Length: 411
Image (cartoon, rainbow, N blue to C red):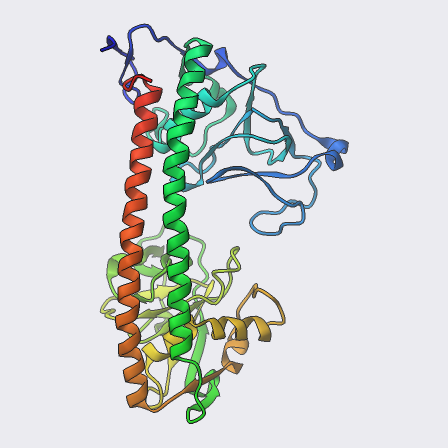
């Protein structure tokens, strides 16, 4: 068993006795190469949760610059970091680029003359997985880290052969873990597609069903526009981030909290049975998503990026039946058709009110809802098991990288 010593850094713990920690600037430097007039010579790259990928300059998802002359050049084998808005753990990123291309000027690029930076990538990946970037600095949580901060961080200074052996070992182990995770993710997507097909088939209109526009049975209202300022009053709040994959929201802890001042009008408060749609979002896939509100015995308002639909004819159609209609593939296709696009960008009250909905008698609706509730629960339980397996695999991967990169597991 190798001898260990205290590294002197709490989040690193013990390291092998013959290892040395140095500042990152011993191995890397930060050089910002603004592309300027050479912009057409390079492809656009993006740092994602899954590493550095190629991205079209015409891709309008997310933030899109007017021009790319201010972007910086990232080269193959260089490390790239997004360390902005660190209060939100999911926004930070670490990558080792397999390509040469352009990245956002907000990214930090670390370069050197080495042939292989995989070891250092795994070191920073260990920091990322353990949220080290998010808790640096004397004040606890930092809003961002700059290149100077990054270059001052401790990093192991070990010989190149050991670096390569560790990197090869983690490449092998992590690729196998990633393959298992991908297999579960593919299965989950197929289950979700199957669930949608079950719903779509169950609510597909029959010849004896009635039909009418949504505007005939419901009223609509856009949500609250707010500036997020800290004020003296608090209220529960439904934002787009609270939708997730939920069919129904029925617990107080499922909602965000909004601070506001002044008076909250009654018509901006949600009631049991209200259905809320995502009206506008940077992700086109989210626009048109809906959720049913139930078991609300507390004041609850909703975002201006949403539209509330209130069923005024519950004698004709159940709210749960409507929800299954809204989750069907046919409803999404109708939204896209009526918005004259392959993928809807914005939803509005007029578009919703003109959409036709078909429904059977109340007894038949109740039977369909009960059947779908049972089938969907079965499918969701299988999905939940696979998601738990993915979580366990990710935790194992994080633990493995930590143990190997700090020398606690010898390879």
